[in-house]
Image (cartoon, rainbow, N blue to C red):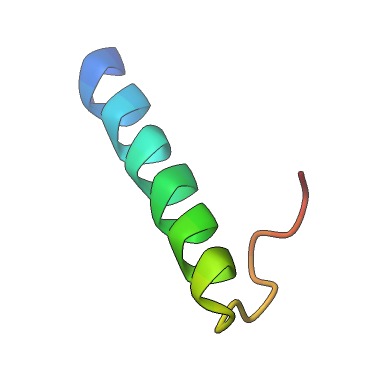
Amino acid sequence: FEKRDETRLISFVVILDDFLYVLGIHDGLSSKK
């Protein structure tokens, strides 16, 4: 697992999490911010 791919994956998850939160369908899976 390359570092670059890991960073990209984390960034994607964070962006997706914020997107779901904005839509109002956030289920609180990653509400550790």
